[in-house]
Length: 207
Image (tube, rainbow, N blue to C red; front, side):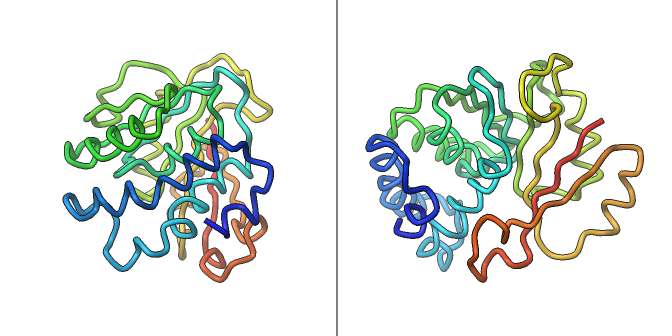
């Protein structure tokens, strides 16, 4: 939690309380349903919460924006973003029922009124969204082609509607397969100067 407050010292008391609760909630749920690796739970705030909030550092969504989190697992990056932006609407989807159960229970325990959860594949959705966010759930070309049709045409944010994807390691070959889209990459280490983020990137994709 100290790491979070170091980078986000101005969060409200309610947000601080919600973020503080995350550790006990995920530790408890992880003992029943393994959504975060056992060795990773001790690094929850850096590896999961801060990593998710790199998206907030990249772009703060305008109020009433609709955000889709695909392959959310236990609720990342959607739940940290929803805490940070209570005036935006988040739909968290995952095809695995037990993972969505965790995401739903955690968001309810935090009292998040701006989060919905669904056990669904992205390609089954009919709604449209301003942005689609995700954490490396599948190769970028496949993800892009499955989800880009879910972007709304109407713009309301400082950047055009698009996909904001958290990715690590080498993926130049994946970007080359997306030459029919506009892609930009950004270093998360520019936002958080911690060793964990040295190879972590944000990939921003638009039509």
